[in-house]
Length: 181
Image (cartoon, rainbow, N blue to C red):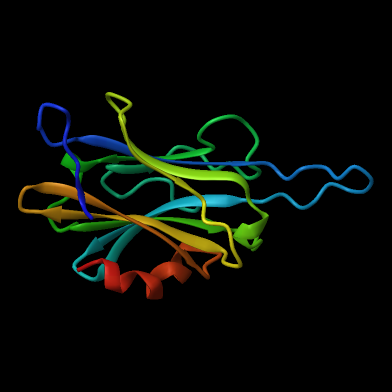
């Protein structure tokens, strides 16, 4: 069910963010350290059903600066959000009517290897959290967190939580079409 992105006073939100967190690979008691797991937060911007732009570890800002990835964590080290994508909804051009928020594993490990993974959507000004999802464990290498859609009364968010096969954001494209209408 779509969640309207509104403040407590009913005003439309201007500045939201996606946070992604996970724990670094753990050393084994006897043996070598397992390979680092590099999850990536990505925002794919759509005009109709056509992708207009992507913000991810290879392109940190949208051309207008309205969507920005604040750094690329390669290991999951650290507490809290390991990667953050900020979205200034007011600055988005009117032709952008959808944004897919996805997570992919650039190093190719399946999500059954992810420890304590989460993603969340929140208001950057108040800190109010709209959704918190545990990263879906399983044999997939990507996940559709959710979809932001522009409507006549403002932006709405629909949580998806669907595992997909995608090591890179462009590989998520075939999985997104049904959610963008």
